[in-house]
Image (tube, rainbow, N blue to C red; front, side, top):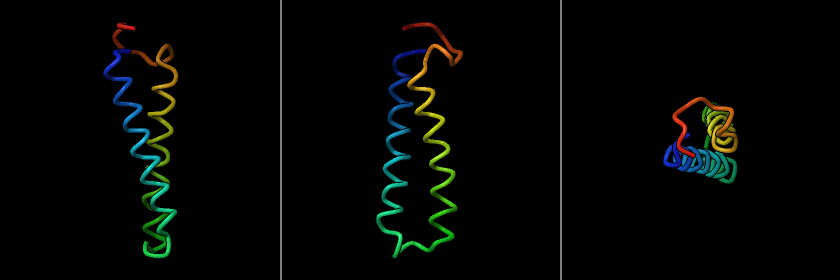
Length: 65
C-alpha cells in the first residue's frame, strides 16, 4: 500500500471519528433520527478505513512500503 494512501485512510478515519463524537456531544440539538442515521454509517466507514490503515499488509494494493 502506498504511504500516501495510508495517510489518507488515517485522515478519513479521524474525520469520521471526530464527526461521530461531535454528533454525540451535541445530541440535544440534533434530532435522534439524524444522529443515528449519520453516526452509524460514519462509524462503519471509519472502522473500515481505520482497519485498512492499521493493516496495510492484508489489503491489496501497490507495494511501496
